[in-house]
Image 1 (cartoon, rainbow over the protein chains, first blue to last red):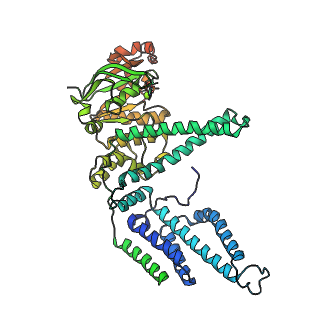
Image 2 (image 1 turned 120 degrees about the vertical axis):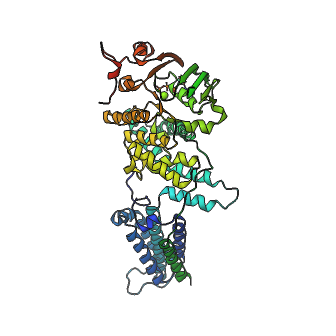
Image 3 (image 1 turned 90 degrees about the horizontal axis):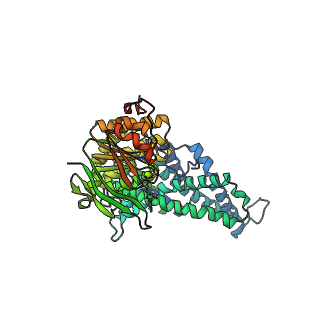
Length: 251
Length: 249
Ligand SMILES: Nc1ncnc2c1ncn2[C@@H]1O[C@H](COP(=O)(O)OP(=O)(O)OP(=O)(O)O)[C@@H](O)[C@H]1O
Ligand SMILES: [Mg+2]
């Protein structure tokens, strides 16, 4: 698999890693909402401060994250430029390019700020929460909703994440094996896609069959041990911080 | 009373392939049985009947004297199956999660699940990997993980389907040590392989399958000389003893 640190779980033992997943998900929601509602400069500064603080206590590899964030940087830059040129208003004083409006630039920057904060919040949450926890949290939130088979949905989520790397490895291997037999000499791209798609599909289905057998061999059942969530004082404190930030922004 | 027993077990696939035919076999508690046979001789299909993953076309399977159909979950708990391809057995995103899958299915209380996971990982020596992603483990470690996943269900009988395929020398030794240890702890072991030179010394009994039929069953030193009739390499040189057929020192 590609070596991307962004949006990947990185196992550490920190307050954020240990935090109750349910509260963490609520914090994610609160901070993202705050970012979308933020309008004044001090809102952004407070949010940025909170996120950087979170990155630091989570001990995530900030350097590697910054390297990966480049891709988002390009998108953010495009947003700023497009807004700056397209939103009508007074031109910026003493600035040579007159088609850029002050209002446009500010709107662009504001939007970019929101996007950056949301991306960083997501990076912190995914970096400190294992998929298993995420799965359990989803299951917990779905539990009170009638007619929703929460265990089945949760199992599907985790199986999907388990299967994706397997399928990609498989695909890569198949492509190498076909290259070794000079598949490149075939000029018809549809033919070449056929050689990949059908075998991959049938292999994946066969693999899925095997996994079903393996799960049955281990007595798969939907009446299963439920995850135990533990909440401690620090978790509530962190939630309180997020709530205050949210209130500060919307009031 | 045999712990596992099959009576005239036959399986015919919908496409007409007769995978196994009229297999009657009794396995006693504590035995170490090696089942050998050429590719396609029906070993995997047979193993999958022993814990009810496949339904017989004809015949029956008894676990502790009771038909498997009576309580299939109980049967699957008692008879653990380690798959030929460990990748297909992995369902968790971390090693510990994967081992927890079985006990969670049995709906054990969370603290008991935790304890049994710890115990199983310790038993196979994978404790230090508990937070690793299973796909980053080596072949031998993956096999051990698959074994831990089965141990967590506390089975009495463990079936290993080709446990040595794809492993290098240290990998084979690691896994073999584990299997012998489990046997010494009192588990009944069924080991499917065609590489007799790696394990036969540890077995009490050798069963050979050929084209879906059970053709030989007896003491290793009696049966082994017929193995080449059925596409299984006879590993003994002149004057060599069965007791030397192991990769453990
Ligand atoms: N799903 C299926 N549909 C039809 N035939 C099958 C199916 N699965 C297995 N078979 C056939 O059943 C026979 C026995 O297969 P099995 O997988 O048990 O062989 P095996 O002894 O385990 O071989 P190997 O050493 O290659 O693992 C083979 O002829 C195989 O082609
Ligand atoms: Mg097989």
